[in-house]
Every structure is written in C-alpha cells, then in structure tokens.
Length: 455
Image 1 (cartoon, rainbow, N blue to C red):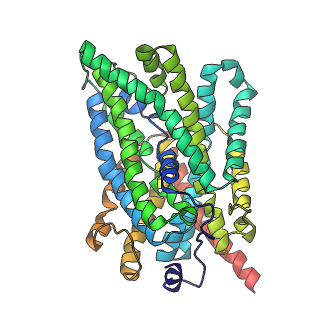
Image 2: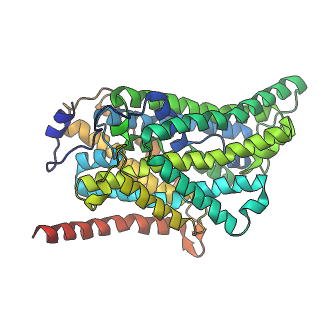
Image 3: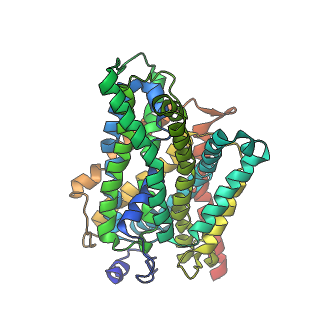
C-alpha cells in the first residue's frame, strides 16, 4: 500500500515517512491512552466551565461539543491517518493535498502554538506539587521542577513511542482513580441526602462565552496522535478505533464528575481551576483531596510527555523532505528522531522562563487555522486522489465537504468572543495573527536558501 501512496503523490518525488519495520510499534491501548493525554488529561481544567455557565449549561456544552467540535475532527483524522499513515501526520496530509507551501504553514502553525502551549503543563505540575509542600516550589524551585519535567519527558521520549504509550496507560489509571471515587461519592451523597440541585442560575454572556472557549480547549488536539502514525501497529485499523474510544473516554470523564457534583448539591458559583481538590476534601476527606492533587501533577506531566511525542515528529518530517536541515531526521536505535526531540526539549525549556498565561484565543487561532487546513486537505484529496486506498472513510464527498463547517463556526465564535483579550496593551488576537503570518516569511526564506544551495 505504501508504494501505491508514493506513486500517486501529486508533488515532486519524496518518500513518505513510514515505520521502519514492525519492531517497537505502539499498539491500540497505548495509542488510546496517549491520545487521551494529547487531548484531555482528565477533568482538570473544566472547572471554569462550571463557574462560567452553571451545571445545566455546562452539561449541555459538554454534550454538544463532542458532536460539533470533536466528532468532525476525529472522523477526518480517522480517514487521513489510516489512508496515509506517516510520521508527521497532518503536515504530510496538507503537503500532499495542497503543496509544499501549505504543508509548511501547517507545521509552522502547530509548532508556533506549541511554544505557547508546552510551557503550561510543567507549570501545572509545579502548581499541584506546591500543594503538597509549598516550600519545594518557592523561588527558583518553581523553575527547577518545571525544568525537571521537561528533562524527564525528553529522556522518556528518547525511549520510543511504545514506551510513552505504556506510560500513558499507567498514568491514565492513576489519574482517573481519584475521580472514580469522587464521582461515586457525589452520586451516593445525592441519592442519600437529596440536596437541592442548582442546575441553572444567573450567568453572564461573557461567562457562557468563556465556558464554550474552555470546553473547546478541553476537546481539541485529536490530530496530534496522527504525527506518530509510522510508529503505530496496523494504523489502518487502530486510528479509527482510537478516535472512537478516546472521544468516548474524554466525554465520559468530563460529564460524569460534573453530573455527580450537581446531584451532590455542590454550588457551581465561583467554581474555578483547582476546585476539584476542595470538593474532594469536602466529600471524601483529606486523603481523597491529596489523591486529586497527585492526579493534577500527573495531568501536567502526562500531557507534556504525550505532546512531546507528537510535536517532535514535525521537524523530523520536514527534514525528511528538505524543509529543515537533514540533521533533524536522524534517529536513534529505537527509531526515535533524537535530534528533533532534544532540540524541541531545549526550546520548550527556554520558554519556561516566560510568563505565559493560558491564552485560549492565541491557541485557538493557531490551532484552529491548522485544523481548517486539515479539513481542506481531506476534501482536496477526495477530489484529486479518489483512488487512494481509504480503510476508513468519513462518509461520501458531500459529508467530507461539510465536515469542517461546525468547527469553523465554533472557531469564529471563540475568536469573536475573545476579541478584547489583551496581553498588556497588545491584543492577543493580533499577536496570534502576527505569529501566524510569520509562516509565509520563513517559508520564502527557506525556499531562498534551498535555491542558493542548488545553484
């Protein structure tokens, strides 16, 4: 099949970055666990949805978004990842469909977003660690622990995709175990004490808008799993299954704790990031509170570890095709692009010293732009390569054409809602737009250097 894919390429001869033998492949369950961390990492982070919208609206948002936001993306990823199972994932899809320029923009948008994104997860780890022993994270200790997360995850990723996948499975169980107990206690308290359930309440338009943005944030990132398709066992079968099961897992792990807290009579007013710990102490005592805190630390570590696996395949794929120096394509004996992993690790470590906030609008404009390019690639490949073998197909051509409409509308709404967000005196959306527009500049510089080398 791979030779057929190469022969049908519409661009200059190149090789698809596929796996180098069956040794050391990631199996289905580790892939599902890694995808879960690339997207979610558990219920941590959804507290602001409750505080902004209340239980009734929050449950509605968490029910609707999997169909309007996640499902179209997982269908698109399921088709493209199974049809073109290449390391570099969405970069390879977009380049194949629309050419080198747009492929470069896809990779640039994703890597630029990672600079803002990846500094957050070590900080999340440190913030929960500080709840155990505040003195450990005081002063330079905060930076030291965050740097340790980067170093450990970089070293872990050098052991290969299967190692990251199996580690994600273990962290998945440890992270969700306290929420299983917390959810059970919430239902038990509700059925036993019959407290008044506060489904509604007064909530501002800004609060609802924030809840939708946060929910979009917590339901995005499905395409990241496709970047390691060349290192997955039987990707034609396993990617569609992974998209299905991970979507169900994420939705259930968000909805059940929220419903349980509503039935337990816990007030959603002023519910914000970190309040899961307080609720755990209230319903289950200090030990459950500590378990939730430990899960929060695992959340930050596990998400960073899984996303290192994803993002570091982009420089490797670009180097394979001459868009970056060939050194980024070097692999170790475990078939890991070790130069790309180390380089990205150093870049993210440098970003730890910057005081990034969780600016959802910046992530949405960069991630959203790259996502829309992927939906465009889905349609273009249907038109230009109808004979391409597609083990999984996301409906007919009409379905493929409308699949990206709901995500595009949601992205547009989120950006409109965040139009007044500022970084100091600078508009966050303006900053994200400037970052996105640097992509064409760097592409033309790269093309110029390549032209000089050829002459």
